[in-house]
Length: 199
Image (cartoon, rainbow, N blue to C red; front, top):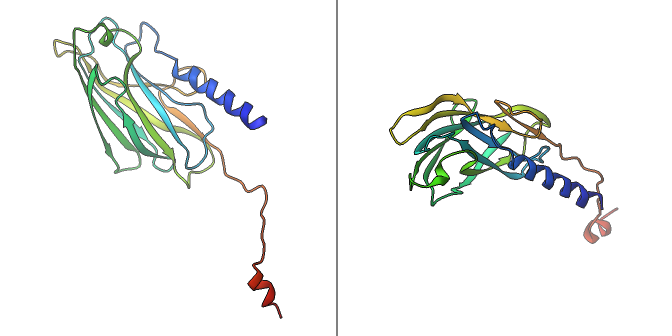
């Protein structure tokens, strides 16, 4: 049916976005968002990945900002616990809340902590029930506080992360389109008690 086909298309697009990586010559962090639109109260996952170039990514610190009028934080998954010990915390003050992510490599001799597409974290967010319908162009932004090598040198410092959200080119903000929930029909009925009490 149409809904099944639409779900399959969205799943395919989400997989395609998740597979996006930073260009080989761009060291930094990529945040992959699922394809919009999303419904109010729907929970989805974002994937955070790094390109360290030729550097060993020994430590990292990232802040992922999100618009609380559109999104709420729903939890996270340490996607590579054998590679990194990751700590997260949420700050909920101000107009943009943020998720702080700090990680350190378990085995700095592993080839998995060097190069492109290093998995750092998956985080879950929920579209808030009262989110305004339409495109929230900056539902997400993120700052790479630091990517640090074995010598404790920051090879990336205070740099915007890039987002892949289905708009084509990588962006410095993540867009989220919210679909309105609309009633297509209402059904009302009277109880037997109500019917017998009509005068």
